[in-house]
Image (cartoon, rainbow, N blue to C red; front, side, top):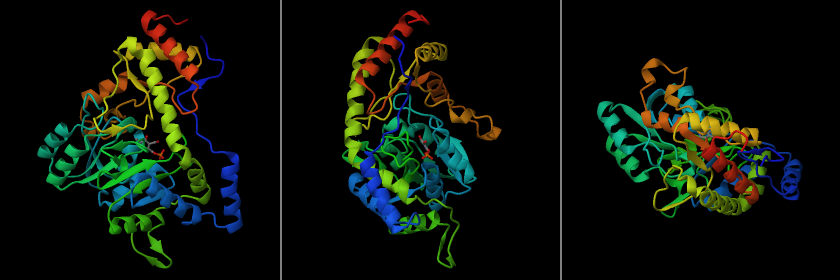
Length: 374
Ligand SMILES: Cc1ncc(COP(=O)(O)O)c(C=O)c1O
């Protein structure tokens, strides 16, 4: 089988044109395009309601949201423990803030930052001021252990929850955990605003500091602190307002596709990241692990030859990036190994189930036979 049209890892979810146009028409009538306009305020309100959180501050993208949270948490220029198994933006935000990254390896089952190794690292380096774990693939970190360690050492706990929108743990949105939590609303995500993101915080002071920093750090002629342009435009917020009501359906469709992949690929006994008990997963990604990098590359090549384009999420492990200072590149063998072996299969709500079945069949044949003409 060769797919007639390319099957990409994801496809952007689009709103009903009539719904989006209605918001756009209102924006044009108000002639208020940015600077905390009506749509941004409505989106923050709707997100708070959907997520069950009181303080959600939307931003122009997830990377800026991370930078704002790091800055307002007082972590600028400090040592921050971070997982090496994530998208590069997690680390970029730290480096733009002149933080020193302290890479802590992941757990072999959840692929999230290991609390055990974090504790060891704190014992060696008690001056670590913050911890930046990632709910990778929208799966939950061991939030209870991480919280306990951060409290013990007086460190700020800031989650990169970029992929975790819609995931819930023990009855609460995953974004509720930590001192701060940051999400991305990029067009590839389950819920998006084309480009966008948010910071979740838990005190009025934090919310005020974030709001100030998002708009250059000044109010009228009074300048209070370092800021940046982190504002979301009205049109981006309108996309969010148009898409938010369909999010549960999107998650349900992805859940169905997950089940389909699970059943179709059962015979391969593939290694997959573990879900903690108590997690209601958003089914954002479908990662699989190959026995080694050579087999991943071979299967990826076969799939591409048949017009199927999975992605290597997340490769390479960030502690191995060439532009890091040598002193920062501590070995993280579990993350480095996972990064070499992980491949994400095409998955999005509108992905036709028969295409998922075809991808699975192709994958099985490629794995079994090594046949490049499967
Ligand atoms: C884990 C992680 N962190 C940060 C980001 C950055 O978000 P954005 O693309 O909205 O800047 C992303 C997504 O792209 C991500 O997946």
